View 1: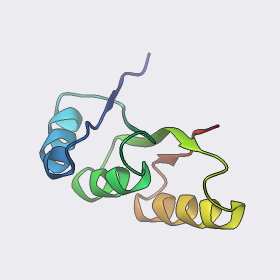
View 2: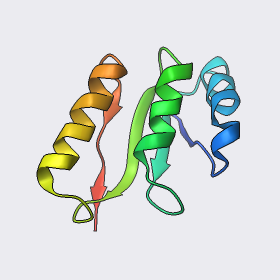
View 3: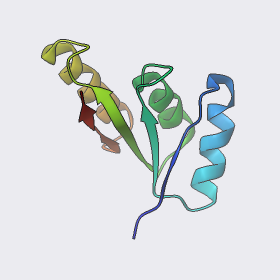
Length: 90
């Protein structure tokens, strides 16, 4: 079984939060498209972790063009060394 956690809404607290979650043994970190774009918090998480999976637990599929969404996903996956999973919704 894998256990994930959300990053929270305060962008300034994300670095400390994700370091703690990784140290506590969580398998993944999620960000949903609610109050913020879900990709920026995961970029912060990628910067401050080395092992946990980074997941959009819903990125709105039609808010961006398919090309922009593909580029964002590709870049985040490359930057995180293969730890990104794109979850789409509408």
